[in-house]
Image 1 (cartoon, rainbow, N blue to C red):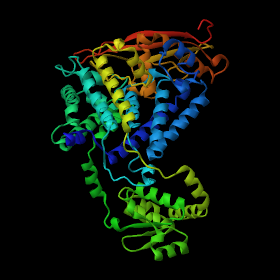
Image 2: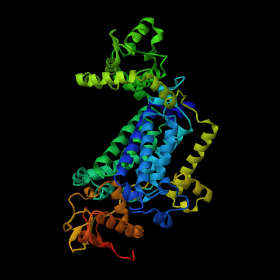
Image 3: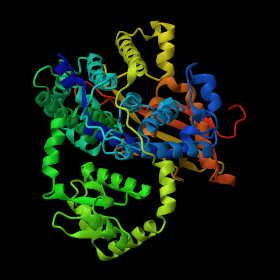
Image 4: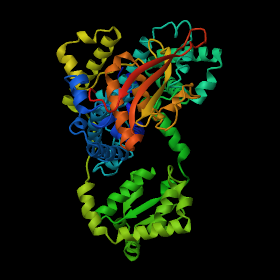
Length: 592
């Protein structure tokens, strides 16, 4: 039984390193994507001013430092800080601290404007939450390079690994349990309905929906795969083989989602979650494939009396993919130590016996690197090599200062592998709450959950609902037209920000009408009666954004928001669109 538990719930440190890098990349991508609409979604001049949000829409457990100030500069500072932390997480610098801070920033950002959130945001938040209890910096990181005593463990088994793997299983189990519509089973029309949502569909999805039998087959495939995901990811026999099959199939499924539907980061967050199950055998196999002949005899000699030199040597060796014993103190070899002092340079001894100095030494390291061998030809180009040589000289001439800075910002430390009793208890409690919440949501009894449980879940933002295309894909769809009138009577297209008559014809690709996935989510929600109160604030935002760039008679006076709603029928037909007026707005009315 202990071996089975290890096979099912232990995670290879190399897999954790891949997960950490992916997490950092997704956090940065999310921040960059949101930053283009920083004013629109996160300031008092946007679609949801703080006073309105707190008075009308927030619940008693809402917290967000993004709500402390409604100015753009405050949001920009928070975005910048979150980006720095995500970058540090990516490289594994003070990894545990950066994971905690990144979770705090992400959660705060998401709950400044929940209306633009989707399932991918919830999963990213949960992965980051459980990541706080994992040694993400144990391998291929700055932290790993600066360990006092390198760890030899290859697998991590703790309540943290159990929790994050179970969380992934929860996603697939409950999304399948909630898919109760006949469109999934027995009809097999769910993929057809999903691809008929024009606000999501991509050009490839448009092409694909001309093949009914293919869509029916894909429906059964998706349902069967999600239903069996729990058994594929947690097999009690032949764990590595079956899990590998599951990983490949699930990755292909999410790749299919990403090319067929505009879902933002959602498929990529799902794919990152799946990669947590990558077994150690894969890394052993890929390591053998990437190993360069003779690389085991490569040596880097550094000045052990220079703290900066020693630390940088360790960091470079780790990130180029070599084993730690490649880096050695030059003082251990009298001849090489003499050469180092003569050339005032680190030394790399190539497998051929060639002794290299300065930037040339780095080029040789790259040549034998299993990861960055492709850089060596580029770095050997004359002008690139000249820049590298001058850069090395600049660093060498400031070794004393850099040693002081490295002592301050790059101290030696030890990556903590074990959670300890206290944090193990915290993880176990949170995992129990997550399971409780998902079960209650499935049977629609979340409102009856004990107050203390509800308060804990909502305060930590562990609440989640995996109902993408469940119980079946939506059948209503449509597109927006916003017809405005300027002070001089000119009719304009407010939705596209153009001084021309708006077109009422259906766009060739409706999904391309939205600036990004955040606006898509916001406007798809705005067409629902559930969000009728928020149309006023969208109207005020449209007035501000138009009139801040216009003067006199060219200012926007009034506009009407129309939504042309289509309903997808069950016989591969679409009902004629119905024109709905969602809102009428007067930009200069004192009643608004």
